[in-house]
Length: 410
Image 1 (cartoon, rainbow, N blue to C red):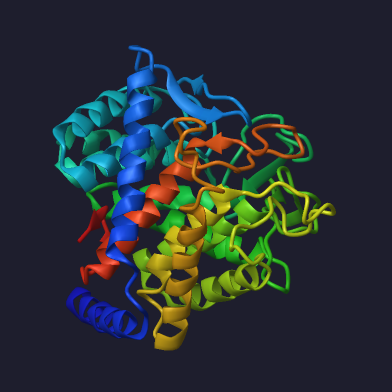
Image 2 (image 1 turned 90 degrees about the vertical axis):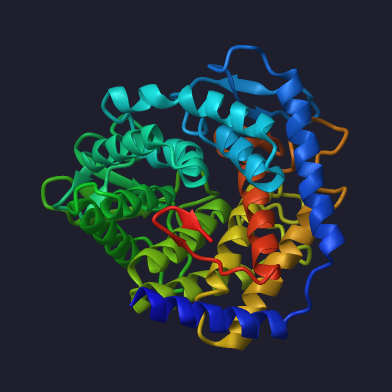
């Protein structure tokens, strides 16, 4: 089965590469080299204490806002360092990545405070294991997966996102699940295939199936949050927390859906997910502005004056590159890949790169607009997915087989 799937992906890759113009290798290398330079500047400016992890830089400012290992974004900085090491093969970055990854080890020493444990450990320690094979990383990841799984409610069929009081979710009377949670499933799939409890696979699969059923409107735009009856498991309502309204398409939420369901198809080989993610993707692409960088919400009333969200573009670009290797329709696969390239081309311009303005990679991301948080800012997860997308494009255009099974990209 694995070899047949590999052959299909290889054949699709060859057709896609033939159907699309190869991007300028110099432009791609220049973008990656730019990232390395910005990461170097950040490392040189950071405090000696690895417990202080960069998260964002406010609009017009130059200094990073720091968080501790408990913050949901804590894994993206060490993940960026691992990607920088992967690109350069310079052990300096490996040493830095190890240092900041180790700072996250205490996450598995207590119960999960929310669903973000997958974000925290798989972007950091997961990449560390992929690139080094360090068995300590494997142990931490397996423990993290078991901890995350404890938030699963078999009656609702989803993992609880916020086991705390958040406006609109009626905790603890109600069970809440947010679209972002799709990204955390990768940790569970990985663990089930790496010697962990096989039930972790079933939990991840059930969560994806339930989300596919309940988190989308008839036009395949997504709700940010779905609230369930904790006792019966029935869906009560779909709402937003970070989007413009309960009926709008929050840009990053839709990008999480595209990325998450692409990953679920990779891990399950279930065609339901491949067919579904294309419909979720197509509505996103159809509504993009000319430069392929979405406004923070596709239904924001002040478009075109509304803030953009470069982070949503980076997440989607990375997802589309992987999705293009799975879609059997070669014309559509080439279209997805071209869309990803155009997103990356826009992100790599002076309008979106931070360059001399600050030490981040990108400008113009929007974190939590309704709450007034990180609006038009440089945010660490935008940088992470931008660098990931550039590396994925480099591998694909080099003719390498792009798969990610059990944490391995070949």
